Image (cartoon, rainbow, N blue to C red; front, top):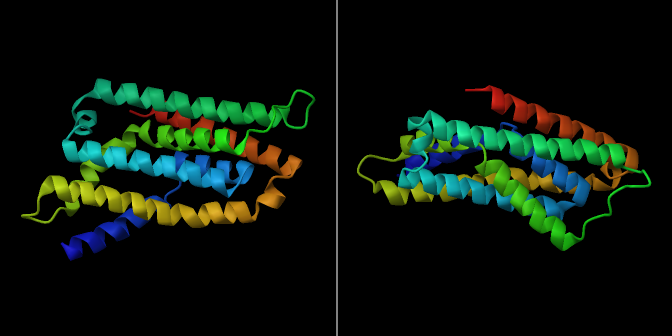
Length: 207
């Protein structure tokens, strides 16, 4: 069991280091709204990880492998979410500094909204479900209770993700004073918006 846990932690770190939609959303929130909001996004993302792990443990995410329709429904919904968030970022970048600029969000609203963005971004990605149901069981040692072991691995997966994203949020918050300047923030919104739209279109186009 100890060997399986060590191997799983190493593999989970490698997976966490691969940038994706969650990384873009987390870094954008940390830069635009600060570390507190960035952490709220991370917590939402990790709740999504736990939900996918729970679905894998219960066999629910296996439906994504067995049903093309179920996979496509989540894929299109996830792509629409990414495109919507990217388009919103591009729109905010266009309005930044103008007379009709949107008012700044309060910390409470921003954290709540950031949490849901992190959760939805993770949970609306069907690849995460396919990954969970195909990745987690490989590390269950022979003779171990499958359900409890998968649940434990899901928690470890979320903790590894959290450990990886904490330095990113800290670094983004550290640089926030510079990055939140109007011209830099506008460019940041443009880049992150374009990346999110591109990731959404890519997800929609893939089978």
